[in-house]
Length: 256
Image (cartoon, rainbow, N blue to C red; front, side, top):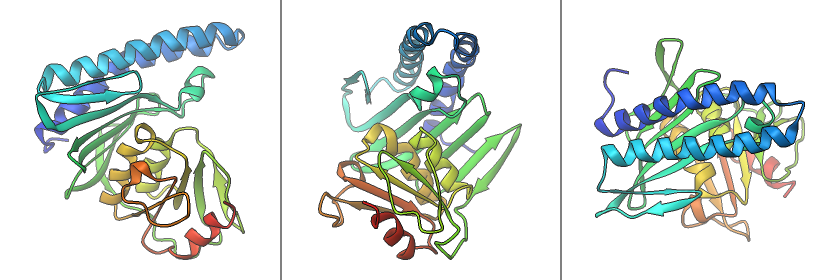
């Protein structure tokens, strides 16, 4: 990770700082599972703390940039740049002590996504990408470039589903509960496709850039099933490798 841009360095440093709190609090939540109410209260406080840590770190390093999170928005003097932050994507998993969640940050320049980070400190998997430079994973002190899978037959493929149901003819469907992590797994070739229904920018932004930089396709559809102007205002998002479309799209949309 020696050749990161200055912006990516800022984003990675932010998630690494927040990871200390997340790991400690997740350990506490695992011990609170016998009292779900207690776990929910503790997790809510933890999420607030993690989000503040992320946003403070980003704005301290880039005070002129804007920032938007689920709890608010800060407008910067540089109106062309903003961070999109999701403190815990997969919050329901976090509450239940399941390790499938992630912090995600994406840097947006007007309508373009410049850089993204998806980090799960429990699994110690850091995914990152920058426009035009590829997608990467850093884990256990090793960093490597990632690419989408090369599966060519929709039958037997594995698809991550979020926010709805789809047809699954001889296709394995997974629901991970974290869109950014599911899209990161798609970028790394661990799953072959992703279908998200009625998702929002906080769920999708960081993962979409990872998929594109790993060589995948992103198809955004409106309520009528026609191509949408932008992924973040779409009703349905389908992401896949370059070899499965249109067969995989037909399988997914067949159940909608």
